[in-house]
Length: 208
Figure 1 (cartoon, helix red, strand yellow):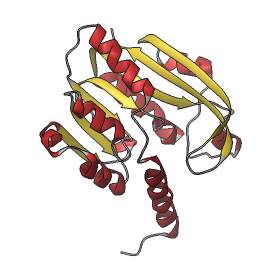
Figure 2: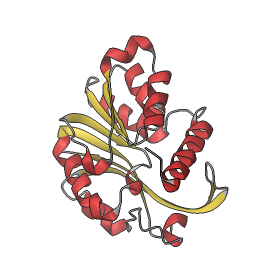
Figure 3: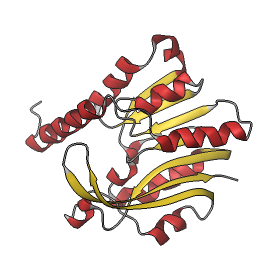
Figure 4: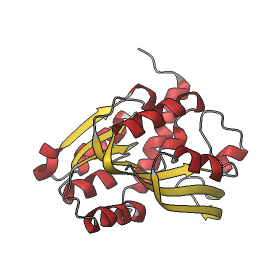
């Protein structure tokens, strides 16, 4: 089957992103969340990495003893995960190539979505967020990022992405205990698109 040009361009964009991202360390937001869990006495349990990319955070979770389900819509991402993960940890790893709107989530103690959920189209976001809330076990955490309305992609009118105001982010977390909320706005260097205006929210929220 012949691939559509848009699909080829999209794949090339993600492959370039993965290449540039490869050397970075795990996100500090995830490390802080894991620290919260350890302080609370929670042993490593089940974690889901939504939009896992090539598995930087997946590998860190596995290294710390977690069982991990890594999900991404890009086959190149999952190939990168499998290449990155220590073979000794592979028995605790499951991978799925699936879009957010089509995914099914098992019960879990941690959902990590590092800068991935904004790429869920608006018409699917509510359903996807509902799946996240349902999958979290009591005492489980969601940690991740959402983009604000002044993010450079929002200003370019990208209707395939979802953006939230601060009040909308808090509304999403109304059934959770919001443990950490940080809004970031300003010029910053992006991975592949140079200096751009960034507007995003980093959150950690606990299910009672």
